[in-house]
Image (cartoon, rainbow, N blue to C red; front, side, top):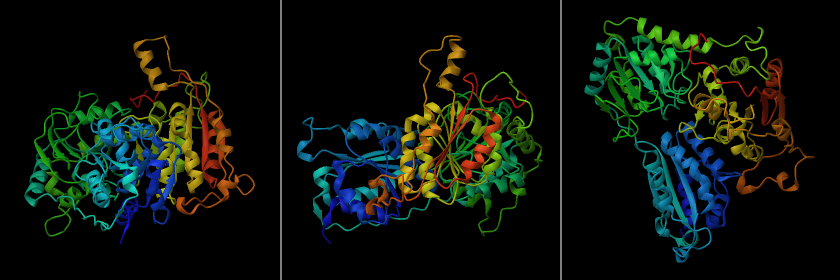
Length: 582
């Protein structure tokens, strides 16, 4: 069958089970866009390339499939770079397709030309270019495989404009199913012996790969053997927070008591994550313990300090091997418990419980009666009560996100997307992608005012494709995290951190795609783009006092469509204290 290289790329993605691509269109890859017209792949039309990349990253983290983003050359690729860096540091599978100049125009400083490998090679697992139409499917399949294998990460694929339209008879490649390695029984028995011999063992879970719920099974084993489970920063949806083994998260905003407990462990088993600078408080805690690293990354990238044993396994394959005997029966918990009681695990769990429970009472007098705006401790406590641990939470960066980390429970896997590299602007596009990938679940973005306006335009993408995220925008008129650092290092000398904001609630309410409010272009359901805009309207609420938050949240949750709550707080509000008694 003769077809264009661009159509072969689309056929390969479709055969690989890709359901959505996130794109900002460009003339450099028109033939791929044409191939998507007839494909069973939804083309999610985004408003900025950074947003498209973040949406693809969120889909990858939530589903376990590589996220797919498509952008044009030069400026488009530059905008998408933030998502590539995030996928690289966060170890998330992402494939970024970039349209390029025609082959004959290369190295002539032609319109929007740039060097794909020189831009991306230091921040991607592989940079590939399809210079041969007969290899278009093969290279696409390689990109998907490389992105998801070993330590997951971003792969960038260049699409020269003229190569895409050339005809080829190359078949659509078949992507092999690659099962993660299962540790040998002797390796698992050795790990069980290490755990049984330790007085204060601990699991630390993180990274991607927990979306299928294997964390709950591992938590059950940990609880029955007296082993507490800590989680890496922004990876704490790996296990249900109702588990008796849940000991809290490490990294920014963590409880002092949780970090102290982690530092006391005499055996630490890292599963899916490493002892990084964030997890270890800047390489200061947790370095003396005997260490087992469970990772598919042969090079142990990002891991600092000792490794007594490196087990090559995924979270799922390790869990299955550790919780079951060779005969397939459940492992006897006594094989891992040794002489240990529940005292060690219970102490860690109690520290996290006290930390999470220490939130202001909505009915009590405010702790800071002279402070203007909403009490975020009360507000996020109410939000947690309404969500019940079932929602998907997305975060960008900034002080506002720490309140969500502190007070919002997670009971389901694949319920958290946050930029572990600290990138701003991820919360809104990630929530849009979450609402498209899991329309039956509530997706909630938590962001500050600075973070929101970096990619807030992607709310329009939600309307265009039928997503219904809830956006919480915490507005203090400053870049709060930087202000915190300035107060520590340059007290009384604020510089470069003030902002002026619009009424975000009114902006959301301006989206009216009902039959009377939509533009003629928006009313049409575009075949190739899968748009479904009929009847959607935006719901915006501006909340200036603590008492207003609960009713506003209830109205937003009841709204059928995207909603936003604009929460005003005092600029002097700092993140919640790391000590639960403060």
